[in-house]
Length: 213
Image (cartoon, rainbow, N blue to C red):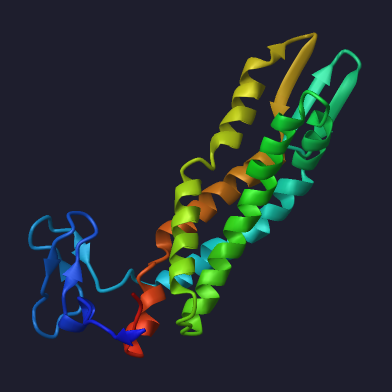
């Protein structure tokens, strides 16, 4: 670590999130609009920590019914079966079906819980003004941001399955309430990532004059 270089915020420069232009707001004005594209600009995302916490907590609450309630209800001539995500993982586990079972386990249980835990970790460390492991924390954020683009795969698979498997009166598949809560978890974690301002990770280091590199 060495002396920290000055940052754009220390020079009063605001970055436009839409066109990327760095602009200097009028004296005494903290917020404004980009002079090039008129997009609202600010030094940091407004209420980033509070809004991210709200989405993370809501996602954690929805995660419980998403795993307790059935995601699919299958009706056949022999009866009706409702399966949760974990029950689906167990049913799929076989000598030939274990890869699919593993994919469902990772995509539907492990990744959503990991995203919630990572976002909570980032929020806590930012609020505590931590300057440790900044590089690792920004990699964690980028990983969660990247995974979020593929988080709806499970929801699409279950929805398409329910739409396609309609062999009435022999067999039908209906989405269960757990699928709704699982979709809510996916959406809320994506909103949490979108609300979080990763520049907050580096603010404490800048304030303490610490430079990494």
